[in-house]
Length: 440
Image 1 (cartoon, rainbow, N blue to C red):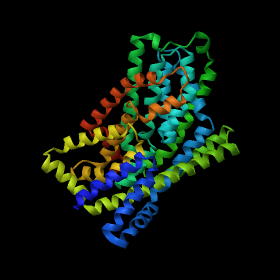
Image 2: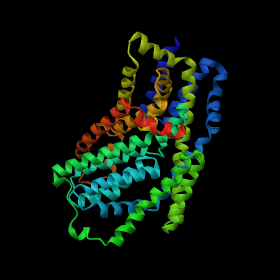
Image 3: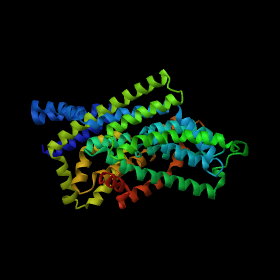
Image 4: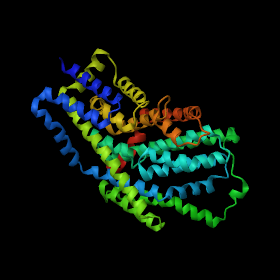
C-alpha cells in the first residue's frame, strides 16, 4: 500500500470515529498511535510522548489558563451586566441603539474572554430579553447576538488563535495583533448594517421611551465608568506587551490579576465566584491540552508519511490548480466542516494537511490564521447545522423559533463574507499592526 493511500485511510478512519460520537482528542490520538505502530514498529510509540514533551516545553502555553481564568472571573462577577446597562442608557435614544450597543458589548466581552460561547451566553441571557421587551425585531437582534459573539475567536485574547499558534508554530502575539484590526473592522461593518437598516425601517429598532432615557448625567457617567473597567484591564494587559515591556505570559498574568482586582473593587469576588471560575478554567484548559496533544501526534505521523508533499503535488501538478484556487477550496472545506464541528475540532483535523500546504504555497501563516478564524466564524452560523445556531436555540426565549434563528443570520453572514474578501485581497489589514509592532 502506498503512503498516499495510508494517509487517506488515516483521515477516513479519524472522520469515521468522530461520526460515531467519540471524543475529539480520543479519535485523533488513537488513529495516530494505531497507524504509527505498523509503520515504524515499537519506535512509533514514542510519537505521543514526543508530542507531549513538545507541548509541555512550549512556554506561551501558560497564557491559555490565565486568559480563560480572566474571562470567567469577569463573567461570573457580573461585570457584563454593568456593561449592558451602560450601552442601554447611552445608546437607547437612537433607532437601533440597543442593538448597536449589544455589538459593542460583544466586542468588550471578546476582549475579556477569548471564547465565543461566553459572548453568546451573556448576549442571549442579558441582552436578548431586554431587546425583545422593548419591541426590537426578534430576527434582527438574534442575528446581532450570534454575529457579535463570534468576534470572541478573532479579537485578542482569542483562545482559538492561541491553538492555531501552537499547531502552526507561529508567535501568538503576532496572531493576536493580526486579528485585532479585522475584528474591529467586522464589528464596525455589523454596526453600519444595523444603523442603515434601522434608519430605513425604524420599527425594527425603536428608541427607548422618554422615562427610560431621562437618566441623570451623574448616573450616566457612573455607568460609563463600568464600561471603562474592562477596557482598562485590556489596556493594562496589552500596552506593556505591545511596547515590549512584558512577555506574552507576563501580560496574561497581568490580565488575570487585573480581573481579580476589578472583582474585588466591585465587591463581587465571593468564594463561589472564585471556585466556579477555577473549576471552569481547569476543565477547559485540560480539554484544549488533550486536543492539542492528539493533533501534534497525528501531525507527526502525517508528516512522516510525506502526505503534505503528495497533496501539494496532486493539487498543483495533476489538477493544475493555482495557489489561490487551492486556498479558496480550503476555505470552502472549512465552511462545510463547520456545519457539524466547532472551531477547535476543525483546526486539529485539517491542520496537518492545510498549514504546511499553505506555507509551501508561499502564503503568510499569520495572515492565514486570520483567514481561518474568519471562515470559522462564518461556518459557525451557516445553516443547517451551524454551531452557533444551536447554541442560540438552546439559550433563546421560546418565542424565538429555529426558523427565526436561521433567517436572522443571513445578512450577517454576507457581511462576514465581505470582511473575509477584504482581508484576503488586502493582507495588510491583518499584517500591518504585527509588522509595525514587531518591526520597531
